[in-house]
Image (cartoon, rainbow, N blue to C red):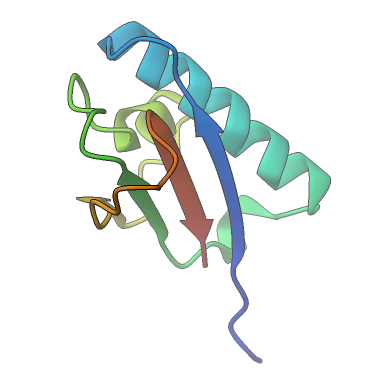
Length: 93
């Protein structure tokens, strides 16, 4: 069996815990539904944010969705001057 990954991205207007969790939940739910992902098949989920998203860990959204037995990791992306700001990215393995 091979390992595959899917990736998605969203942005927040404000750096608040509430908005980070809400937008991350929406994106994660959409990714799982659109790709017909069975939760038992998920190996791990990797979250990244741009340097301006700091009010909460995006992984909190996964825990709120009861993805409690899946390893989660959060990190900041490279700070590229012309990069998209206020961005949260998710990669599901």
